Length: 313
Ligand code: CUA
Image 1 (tube, rainbow, N blue to C red):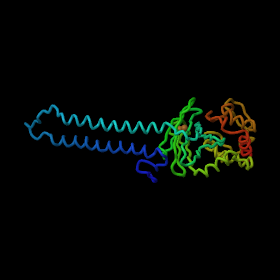
Image 2: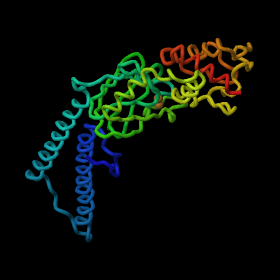
Image 3: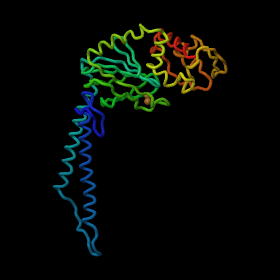
């Protein structure tokens, strides 16, 4: 285990990381050795057999049995080692252990949603217990994304209309970066998150409180939390500046011109519709790129967002 990372890698924080790095380093050092042998040999022979005079001819060579056997057998053995090592690791990475817990991951432009067995949901933050295999069942609601946690040496494409799976077992509590690593449009570089690894008991407490999050909050407080947690801020500011979408400052009660030429006064129904069916009435001057939050936000949470918007004067 390397807790601090190396020149090429961040710290190893999953059970698979040492194996992946081991194979990487083996191939890297092997390549360096052969680079030196081949390039060094090329220069050496170019110098050794350079033409020294007008009548200086190098004697013709046809072949050398010993050399030919050596440079066939040794690389074959090395390639075979790489194959067996790689295949074993590949199998291990692709078959989740039987005692895995399962978390559903949904990628969409441009955030991640995580659904836990007990009904808890998080956005852009995956919370897991340490020393517990976790199977991820991944799917996309729009284009191809890719789920990448460098510390775990884990990466899996997230594809629309089908599930992909992968798994990991975190070995150290802490916070790790999560990236989308498949170019998925304008907000790709902001499709980032965290993996939070907790101890088993911390995780149990977290899960219990996350399952009824916001129960003890005022609606507008919950709305403010959701604005942050569900990554609304990626596209909508609250300071009056438009981003990918219109600003939320003063949004409630505002009269907006729509792309179809009509105008509309922003009320509870318009907000609700725009959350669930974003393409129904798009504000003039903006692209119809917002994803639906159907299945992401509960009715109570949409109410909370509306309450929050009312406070953004
Ligand atoms: Cu999602 Cu890039």
